[in-house]
Length: 130
Image (cartoon, rainbow, N blue to C red):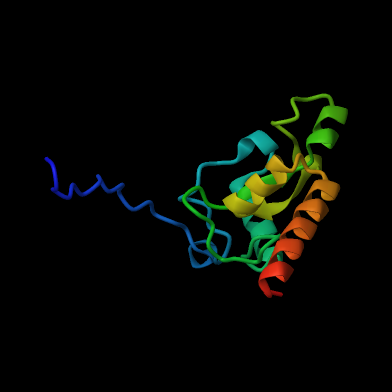
């Protein structure tokens, strides 16, 4: 094996779902997000209201899982159910997987997100990037 290049195993390409796949609010290819109390039709309405885009970054690319239902964890607790389940009143909007993960990692705390933005601004300024 010495001196030989070994090609790493390639992962199969994961299918991503674009906004065009959801034009008209069709969620037939997406598992029902019933845990938040929304039907596929209601998800379609919400998506159309958002212009088929992620509520945060504006992308049409939803990733492999499709649109993610963003909900308010604190409000879910106030409603007396598991903070990860939510209900219709807890739902905010639909986000791509990256933005939904961003919110979760920041614990839905705007101050953490502001600090992260200031951190990036600081180091981008040092590199001369605006």
